Length: 80
Image (cartoon, rainbow, N blue to C red):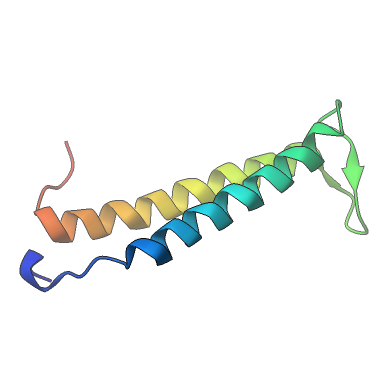
């Protein structure tokens, strides 16, 4: 993909996506804050609050990695 063929998202769509992300993160943060003990098990699967937080970090990091791959395709810079 050449930079000249790359299209950015519509400003309104980007603003909506970021607002949705912030709302979802806020909801999850509120729920997690209800449990002082990260070892508290929740739901039918009895997953620990700690595992939920780790999963959030892993997912966010994976998506940041995807964004970095796109950036490399745009500007051509790779690794350090």
